[in-house]
Image 1: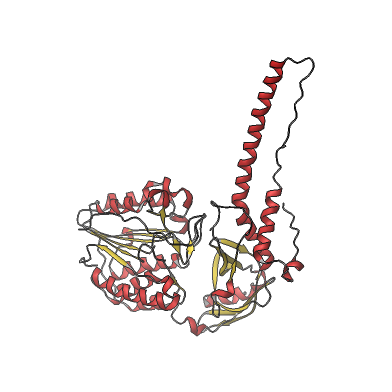
Image 2: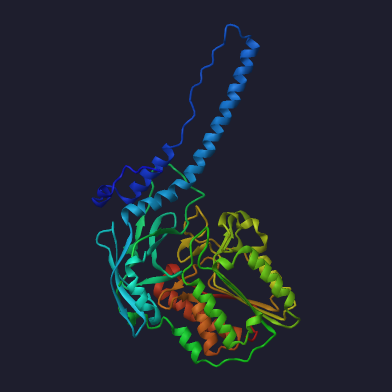
Length: 480
């Protein structure tokens, strides 16, 4: 276990900046690797022939070459992991555990309100709201002192940012929604001045766990259940056995950053499609988070396409990371929950070209795809590929049968896919669902309404740098 020479008091006095702590920790990791001997002296024994001595020298050189190669391999391996580990350690020293206090319940709105601070970050005190159903609220508060909130951090290669705080309770994780948080409050630059390059193991979601619950004006979240309320009041469409729904929604990834509200968006999308477009439950294939693994997505796709009959309608919904592979001229891939972004190119099934081809060449007479992923390699302003900063790449175009398939995508090839914090859904998905609930009947109308609202909201909430303009490709004259 590494012994850190920096102590909490030093950090508190801010004698070291965050980047300096990271740099120090990286050097400590690398110093643990034993270096091979630089000079090896061999002496010819008086009873050893020159030929024998030369043979021994040859063997010694081969052995030393193996030792050196082993050292270089180990050094590079440690080096590639050192920065990520150092970031986590530095967060522990500069932020520490999250602390929730002054827990009060707003029964009318169904939220606990509280104050959040961090044990090591002086001056940081914010308001949060935790959505807890009233039937669980009393038990939640009675067990409050035993709860251990988790602080979730993201690292994009340049900055570390506090993303959210989760409160685990009875096998569920409640999200503490910030009510007065500014981006600058949560970000710290990480500019490493040494010559250590780490091209393969940065950009992964940073999760710091630990501690206890807080307070806020729940009226600010009055639209949190807007879609749910709209759907409840909407008319139920009669079930149609010729309609199929394939839903993939991934919020939690094993090897890269999570996506805020992806799970909730996918679950609501299924509910909307069942009630407003009449898709039967038996015709729904739903894969969310851990269940959206490579194996399940492949298997369920095969199962569904074997059941689909001539003239049927397929609705395809994907809400997850989209990755353009630089080594393949930015060929776009979907990322399953158990896929490592560095190795996704090995899984040809998940290329967008393959997925679209399977759908558009199926027996279905109509395929409508809703894809809440921009395939620029960046989601919510954060890079997906390790070692690649949050700069946007342009994905290679994908071909499919445009006479019987249409694809509505979250944004242009170079744009971000954004979340919508005020509604707790993905931005593009929110407006797609809202407009279906409100009664859009054609793909053209759905796109027109969604494009206008998504672009306007993204510009208002995130500025010109993260504007999101949904796109449409294929037969837009189809009826929903």
